[in-house]
Structures are given as structure tokens and as C-alpha cells.
Length: 359
Image 1 (cartoon, one colour):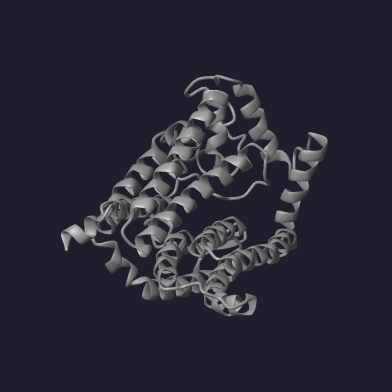
Image 2: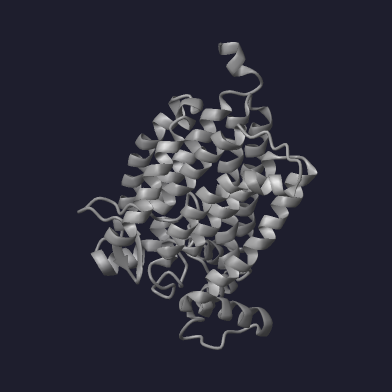
């Protein structure tokens, strides 16, 4: 699909229709080599390095704001020569999951009252707040939302008593105005939100050649795909209508819907629901809390990210720059996704008392 969606851009820009396909294959190979140790080494040993890793991520997120490559007004990437651009915010996703797996596994979550709950929440909220502010500063609201929602879901699941539940829900309600505020402070985000509500309420966008152009082109492609799609390689929207290389990055799901139709989209949703079910099935069988939180965090992260990407591509939520795991072109996203899968498979080896038997 990356080749199919990128062939026009690759040919016109580099005079090589296989350019992006070859780059992605290289990143897949490097990513597999990088991820393999995360499968081989006992995940408990990996969790022990979570604090140094978190420190490195925070430093990287700070440095990229000043030393990163400026692309369209955003500083999100380190570019070193011909090497793939590194996006620290992508690596923050997996690092914070590893960190929280260790931190949450040590919490007893026994509170006297809500005041006691908020004292305990302070440690969780401080680390998450630092990460969120630095990524939001780049600016990258989409990645900030993924990290915050995944982290909050892990925190919410970690406790079972009534105080933990009500305290967590109150934190969630407090977070909603902050997300809205972040959305309207940046002019381009405000335009996206405005376009979204125009589409939602009126069924059309007021500025089809400006702020509404991208979502309109996406919906034209999806609508023309119909039930069964036009067939592989028959997308018209990939020919420069989906702007800024998004045909093979953030909007690749729109190309899939155009070529494989509603049926193709439902098949993809089915696969992700299966992934969700399988991930939580593994979590139920894991021997310890660290492994359980690790599997839950990785599963929620990948499924949440995929559904937010697909929802944005069909107009359910405003457009965001969120990649679709396994399908979106890009080095950092590929590396991090493979590391996440390697860790998930790592933990899955220690189920139903396997660790105790090995000892």
C-alpha cells in the first residue's frame, strides 16, 4: 500500500517510482534489528532501565525544540545527514509505557479519600505533564493526545476501588478543557476544528480550496470507492490531491477505502479488533503486574492510534497528524511500532505460570 499510494510522488519528486518503497523496506530491516533485543531480553530487565530512558527522552524532546529540523513551522525531527529523520516524540510513546509499567506495578492504590488519591496522582501527572508540554510545544497535538490517553488508560485500569475510579474520572474531566484550549490556541488547529464542525453540521466545508481542501479530497476518494472500491492501484486521489505526501502517510487509510471500498475498511477494523482481543487475552494470562501493564499499554496505544487515524480519515473527528501503525510510511513510527510488538511478544512468552516453571 505504501508503494501504491506513493508511486506518483516518488516518480515526480525523485524520478524513481520505488523510492519510498525502498526507503520503507530499509527502515523495516533496521527496525527489526533494533527491535529484536526487545524480544530476546527478559522484559523485567528492560523495565529496570525505564528511568534512564525517560530521562533521555525528556532531554531529546527539549533539544529538538532548538536543534531540530524546522518543517512547516514544526520542530519534531533530528536530521543527521542521509540517515532517517528521528522523531523523539514517537519514541516517547513506548518509553512512557515501559516507565508506567514499572511505576504502576508498585502502587497499591489504597486511598483514604480523594485528597490522598490526588497526592498519589501527582507523581504520575508530573512526568506525563512534562512529556505532554514538550511535545505540545513542537507543536504536535496528535502525539500528545495518544500519549496522554494511553497513559491515563493504564492508570485507570491499575486501580479497582471506588476512590480510584472517581478520582480518575475527575482528572479526565479536568483534561477535556485543556485539550480544547490546545486545539484553539494554534490557528491551524482552530481552522481544522472549524472545518470539522462545518462538515458535521452542514455536510460541506466553507473553504474547499483552503482549510477544507484536505478533508474534502479524502471524502471524494472514499465516496468514489463505494462498497467494493476501484481496485488496487486505481486510486485517483494519490495523484497529488492528498496534500503534503499524506497519501502514503497520515491519509493512507483514505487510499485503502478508495481502492478496496467499505468492505476493505471493515476488514481492517476487524483486524484491529482482533489485535485488541488478543492483546487483552495475553494480559489476562501474564504472571506479574509489570508484564500485564506492559501488554495493556502497548495494545491500547496501537489500537487507539489506529482508530483515531481511521476516524480522522472518515470525518468522525478533526484531522490530526497521527500515523496508522504498520501502514504509514516513516522511519521513527516503523521503529517504535516494531519495538512495541517485540515487547508484546516478549511478555507473551511468560504466561500461565511459565516464569515460575522456568525458575
